[in-house]
Image 1 (cartoon, rainbow, N blue to C red):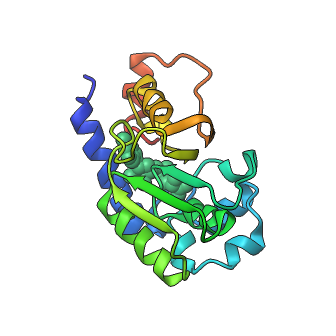
Image 2 (image 1 turned 90 degrees about the vertical axis):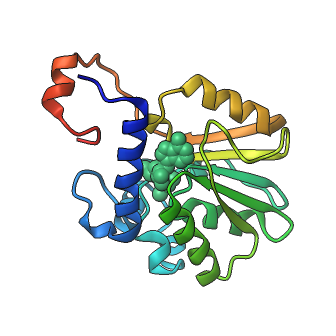
Amino acid sequence: MSESPDRIKSMIEERFVKVALAPTAEQKFPVGPESARRLGYDPAEIDALPPRATESFAGVGNPLALGELRAGEVVLDLGCGAGMDSLLAARRVGLTGRVIGVDMTGAMVEKARANALAAGIENAEFHLGEVDHLPVDDGSVDVVISNGVFNLCRDKPGILAEIFRVLHPGGRLQMADILLKEDVTPEQVTFKGEWSD
Ligand SMILES: C[S@@+](CC[C@H](N)C(=O)[O-])C[C@H]1O[C@@H](n2cnc3c(N)ncnc32)[C@H](O)[C@@H]1O
């Protein structure tokens, strides 16, 4: 029997509370600075962040490598987690720019705020919210970044509509995510068990 959307959402949230509070306990997917290095982040940039800002990194690629962020730009990080990409983006856009991170897991938002403080970053703010109802004004964003979040969301067209709403004309989307190339039968889903296996 398939899980209800609300149940899936609360399972996802429970899982990422754990990734925020006890990142080394996660066994099913890569978490932390070593994963970031493997995904192509500049090791010097990763090492320059406080360890708590990288220990809960759970991204699946490097959206910052997909295009240049310019000084003064407003960047929105969808599903920002503990904020590693947001903090790296904040350094790129500088004090004339701004980064807004949004995540539905309170423990992640709190950790991202603490990480910004620890890293001395003043131009990043973090909000509790969902990617299909962004707490952001229409046409107010230059670049949306996202790392590993779309695959966790059911209404992908709805999220894209939200991204179009908040980006101003000519704005950019730089996202990394995972794609399933083969069909999966209901039997395989049952056999697989947990959503994140
Ligand atoms: C795989 S983690 C990636 C976190 C971060 N982007 C990173 O690279 O470390 C996915 C994040 O998306 C958040 N998330 C999942 N579904 C969401 C939704 N519908 N709205 C907002 N955040 C969501 C989770 O709470 C989690 O922090």
